[in-house]
Image (cartoon, rainbow, N blue to C red; front, side):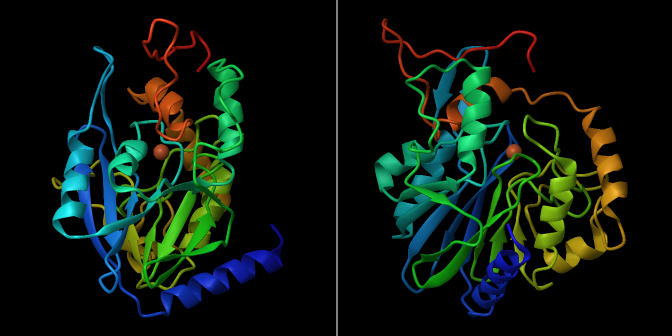
Length: 307
Ligand SMILES: [Fe+2]
């Protein structure tokens, strides 16, 4: 992306933020995977978006369930909202998306970043997914490029490409709120890991600096929270100003090399998420389970000694 394109995209963000449109946001937190699902709606038109939903999965039994997603559906119905968008910030490695299940009941367009095709290529090869697994993003209704605008009801919105945690991460700025996926976490917890296939700590730092260049009052909504030492409640909302001042990994004054050394060192100590294998195989298909084999049963594969 040229400097000019970057500037144009960021100018559009600023103008969306200045629209004085304030979406209403209700968050559903999943205590098993520590994921925050946000339902954001335009109070004027009642059109809504679901950002990063969760399907339960019991890896020992190979069983799925939709209690968490059902709560989201019930909330949307009870409040007479019209689902316009299902927005995924990235191919999650720690939980399975419930987006297609919610879409079946409520409609709406399923969207993710256009670089999903790179992630599909990486994981399609790792899982030897075969030719029936399309690696062109066709499982989604819309693939956003950096700087693309869209509307949530009457509220202007913009998609930003913020790679680093994965190559395809997106942030969605909707009115005065930004849904930033796995980039920054709460100021007292820091930042997302950058050691998954295609991840890059240097790229993550640059994406974070871009998010931190938004106006300081911008509300930030995170994809995860794991609490932090000294804090015993979950939290998922902060501001650009709070992150700039207090983020333990990337507050003002932390340079790129310092961040990369910290992030790389810390990532080397982290184990893989429990639901990595099922999550990636389902989420690379837009939240659909792998196709059934000849006996009618769907399977999750585990590559041995590869990750
Ligand atoms: Fe993630």
